[in-house]
Length: 345
Image 1 (cartoon, rainbow, N blue to C red):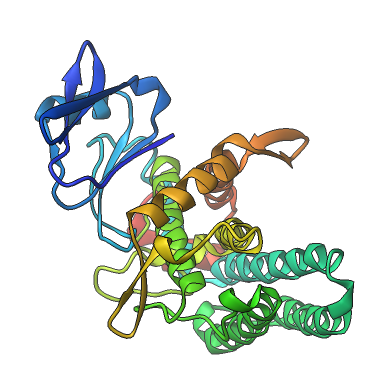
Image 2: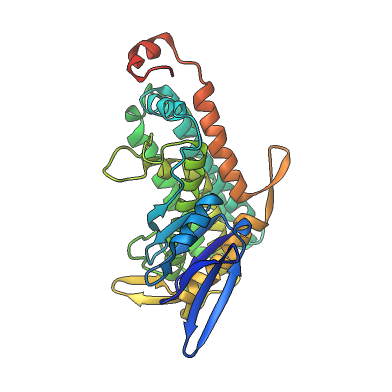
């Protein structure tokens, strides 16, 4: 569970070994206690205060504290100073970023992303047979992009990066074009838009992706992966490149949650505010989204390797699997010689 607090003047502290959120409303003070065992993250927005005791309690229970921007992306994090895993993982991550191994990982992630988009459209098609031709056309195009990604060959990611981005981008353009067309008239949109979102759907989706970024970063840190050392998204200053790489197969979680809210007509004008050039989620919109999103990520279970798991657990398990594959991969003799400066890898 994520404890998300965006009420100006709210105060989080510890009472009776539990987190207590205190909010003043006029003459009344509202108090809410939450047991640490129920939380995996605390999200704080501008105007919220936090006690040192609350930070200590969070660290003791491995609960991350994120300081959030208005649109839902984190700009700071309080995390335990313990490493939590072997540094060998990060050494191998660096080597993979420079070799064919990184190519294979990126192709798998991008292919999975487009496959998830295709499969979502297939599910939507079953209930919209009057637009079957539209779905079939785009599904065929996505199948072509999947094959193109899987057939790419390169010894390092720089050789195929532009082609990968091209296939991914064109697939996304077709996919979102369909989603925008099949919504009710008041919700229709033409394409993806970012900062600012040019329509309410993209405002919801941008916020949902922001939340997903923080969950993926947490999963990578727990698994011992460096969130800044990416393969396809490379080494721009202060960019969490591996988060942007690893998130790709899981973007569908945000897509499905937001689309279901709009297709069920649960979103209305009170959930977004018009800003210069576009739209932004307001408090009511965030509450609507996060209630559905938390249920989708944490409460609903899906099949995963023979067991039922929450989608949040799937992200974490996949991060551990990624780390395990990095460590278990046997290096070629030429790689051992080339990267000997890294020590015992």
